[in-house]
Length: 155
View 1 (tube, rainbow, N blue to C red):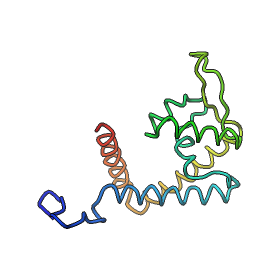
View 2: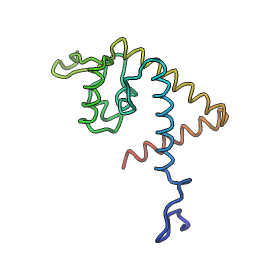
View 3: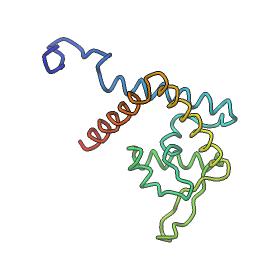
């Protein structure tokens, strides 16, 4: 490794310090626990790919274009997931009162119940890490992680 942390010719970056590897491990681990627990709660028709919609769905509705922007997913991917979630009974399309030509994606009662369950599971996961690291260290980690995410999204 060079002083900057970049690998020398013929070397690979250390997995323990590679931002992409660490972020991916965290994502897949959290997703795995979340969807295992959702399945245990009766939402066994959901898959991790649906998280790109469900994580950003709002009780009062949201446009698909906004979901795509927030999740960083392509509109086509979001559209496919919305179609699946609509067929499964988690969301419905309604006219947007601000623009009748546009549609809002609104959670159904089942979708709202799933959102509440997922929020509770994610709070438990966060609380577990807060206890493990300590409140100050965990809050600092979240602030730093948000800063890295926002910085990366700007490039």
